[in-house]
Image (cartoon, rainbow, N blue to C red; front, side, top):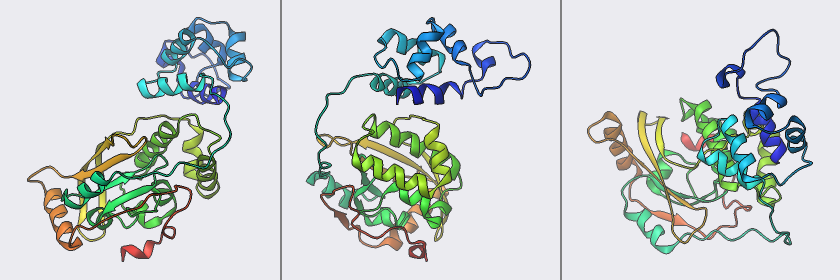
Length: 291
């Protein structure tokens, strides 16, 4: 994995962006191996061994030098360091049950905003009725990756779908980390790689991005276009789980439309379950649910 990551990242760095002259036709995308090695202050042979997987335990100093050359941010640098950290061997275990704390389930029922709990694999573990009014796929048992890549109606919600999917995949890689032999990870990536060309291309880029909130544009079939802030808050005592809340800036048309959507949604009921992520509780995406 370390070699794959280094190769994918160097192919995305333009020579001129790191002060290297570009003369004639280059046969490789991005930087050459020897250029990365020179800029990082290591030998070309040693860098070649890293990409080929023949040296899997480089020093932190070498990795940090490579991170600077490859223009990695904090999250991507942490991911690079984790790839080179030896992991203890252990027997493959059944994926842990992702249990939503009782207090969080209660909070979803009273928060008065679209909110749901996202698990490590981007499964929806709990949600309120306002979240489901925003998207039918925000209900227990659905998976955010499957919905965004495989459900045409979910895709239609996002005017910035290309940008949204790029961030989603980068966040998923950061969330799962280096557990490449995790059965849930293997199953989900395999399914999406077979079903979505867009996912395959994004996964091959090896982008890593922290799971954090950001403004989100939504084209809702009932109330029209909204710009909402999406906050992602870590849940204490529930590793890998995030509380995701959507809200609109006061006094804007998006706030008015969100209020209308709230009235259409009715009472804010909350649903949750103790989830085995590999076993969805509801059927796959069905675009007719938006009708």
